[in-house]
Image 1 (cartoon, helix red, strand yellow):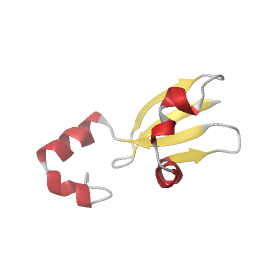
Image 2 (tube, one colour; image 1 turned 120 degrees about the vertical axis):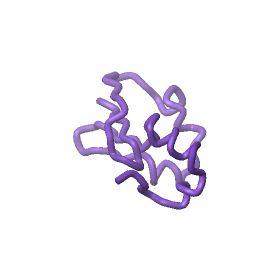
Image 3 (tube, one colour; image 1 turned 60 degrees about the vertical axis):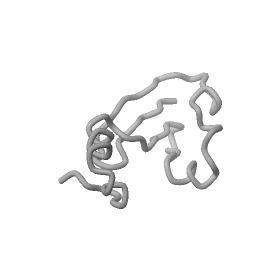
Image 4 (tube, one colour; image 1 turned 45 degrees about the vertical axis):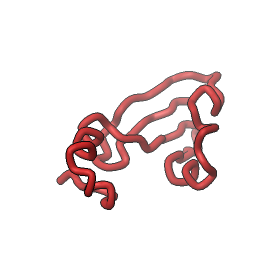
Length: 76
């Protein structure tokens, strides 16, 4: 099982974890609501997961431009 992290704004790959023995508490998923889990976690047929997160560049852009929070994507 691999867990792949992608920025939810620009789509760039942030990182990956190749581990077979991780649970949702170790990954912090227990802090998410059920709606957030549906929105940010995608399970693939082969057992891998894709997680939506925010990359450093997009995080900095949001800090500098708080009005960007209203947009799903803001990087051209």
